[in-house]
Image (cartoon, rainbow over all chains, first blue to last red; front, side):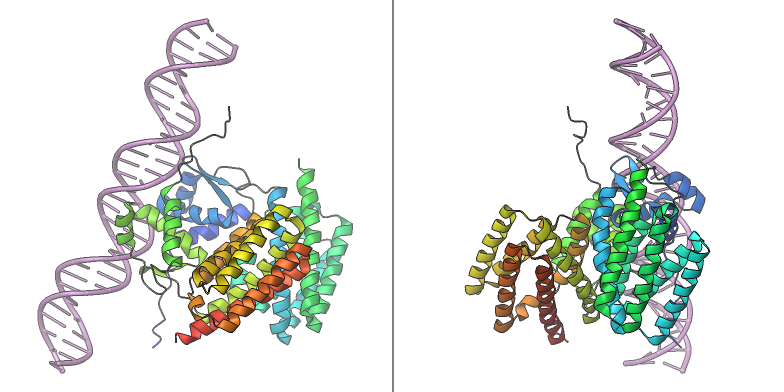
Length: 221
Length: 221
DNA sequence: TGACGTAATTATGAATTCAAAATTAAATAT
DNA sequence: ATATTTAATTTTGAATTCATAATTACGTCA
């Protein structure tokens, strides 16, 4: 019998973390609003203790902002923030490219290739949501192939914050085309297992994305 | 009158975070031991609520490990962990080098130059502790010159975890000499403001460090 | 009307309490 | 004596309570 066969019942604050993160990333709790602590406790049927534990964690994650004696607020997404976040993400993404090329299996490449074709199909059909999903799956597959859980944790935490900007709604035809082109290069570098090249393309790809986000944010002012 | 002149009274869990982090990094709470929750509450005169909030934050930071229904344990430092942490640190350190070269002022370079000379003096005097302090100050000065708070947060969080390994005791004369040489190159690249070169040296420097840590860890088995 | 001050209300931070789980100690059987 | 149950104790997770701070509502006066 397997001793480690324990039934994992995660604590409430962990469960809450997932749900709260979603609420913030999906925009249900919009940037700048107050986190309705009591309401959320009622909604999920928990007391304030685990809810507040979760909020403390989200605060180090950068998704909420704790104002002493005044409660928790959903963090805003400012250009200044993103200007700091993007270079870091770029460095991490470049690393994930390098590591992925060193470790990826033929099967994993095959999966990415398929997802890539799917994504191109969505692009041609101008289906933004599906395109975005395939896109995200590709980046996560590369990250997974890199096989570094520290990297994964850090990258996903930053990615979550960026994803809150609904920049895709603003994507121009030209930029979209460019993004797809870059993805062709990503696939090519991966197939050649050229880590340095992939790292650079991913970094470049990210900075295009940044430009899109920047334009979106500026258009809202 | 300045409106933002509010008296900052940080909440208990934030205060506790600083203290707990120190206890773990300094090794007062050694890797693998159980976090004595009740004892710590008594020591700091707080109730379990803020203490547990702090522990939840330390868990995402990777300094403690929460075992459901069994309490919090100080994370161990394994080679496997460090093998994942170091590449990420390397990428971040390289980025800090690039950004630092782009933004550093003459005055900041001057400070680093002085610290560097100090460090060399400690090396010649074979004063490991002082050497380590100067060393750390240099890396933090570069990080500061990079001027990216996201980068700083992430880097310091990883650095804290690595610092828990008391690897320096294990440093050979040869390695130490090599580290000082690398620091000469770091200073030179900084003075030339050659970001690419600095990034590479820093990355190389870190991987030397990793080797030392690895040897230290292996020597303990 | 609106600026100011005060009282009532609500929200927050943290201590306390309580049920459930885990650990330890004791008791029983082999 | 050594396993194996069973009971007592401690620890944990989370709800509740409580003091304090912040906000809102109200009343006063210029």
